Length: 89
Image 1 (spheres, rainbow, N blue to C red):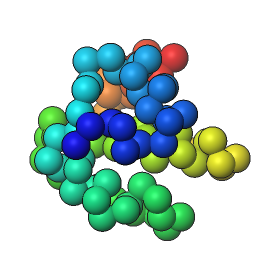
Image 2 (cartoon, rainbow, N blue to C red):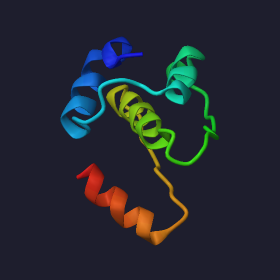
Image 3 (cartoon, rainbow, N blue to C red):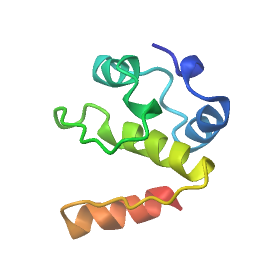
């Protein structure tokens, strides 16, 4: 699935921040097809390592922020925290 189905504002940010991503992988597609990023409920995405959780989390966070909400992005390790701080700047 291409990123064309993603909200245009979110797609623009993703394209600028992650230019190497041209399409969603099957795990990401399943989450999108289930409509989880469109829901206003909290949820946990449990998919294998390196299957695209960060991109899904970023898209959900962007949707929330663009709708006037606030986001907490939590990670289990300081090394991941440092990586994400650099990535999100």
